[in-house]
Length: 225
Image (cartoon, rainbow, N blue to C red; front, side):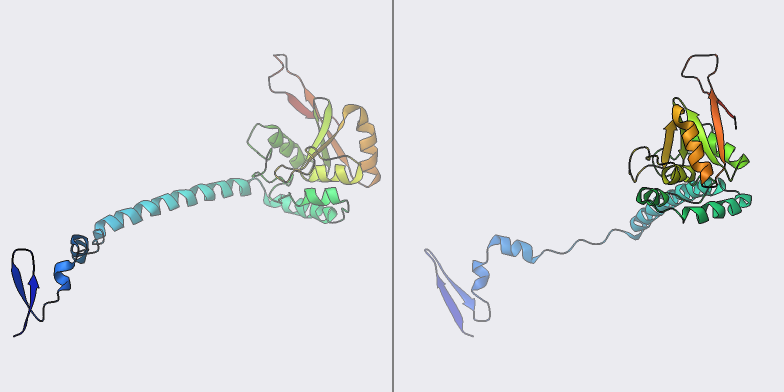
């Protein structure tokens, strides 16, 4: 067998031919990584725990979304469908660009056409939108003008007709994150009524009454005409 001779300062080392000389010159780092093994995957029960936790989170999110969807859908009663379609047909006749932009923000899930996901679109029981919806259910084919301070305001579908036929500007301009709202000052009520009735629409006026307590108390409202 042939040997290689490696001379060092003090000794001579003989190596077999089949042993590579590079073995002696390999750095400690290289030898260290040569024994590296990839980590083992986590135990199966840990994976199952993570999967179960993620599944529970997804289930909770789905449940919350379903509940919200049910609340919105419950606002619309089956008997109101014919009124919704009646208003929808007339909205298709609107031509003003500002009105068309307002119509795009409507959702036909209630008689007012309010999208509850938009700003000021809440239909929580007891708030102003909810009160107007109760009046709208009594007069489903009239445009409702509700007294709010020094203005008569309309929201949702009714606001679109104020902009289209009464020459009023929508509140908040053309903000796409808010429900359609429009109104006129109290002193201009007669002119607004004339504009709407001239185009064949009936109007219902909702007045407000200040209670005997301080100004921040909830105001009462009633149909005046």
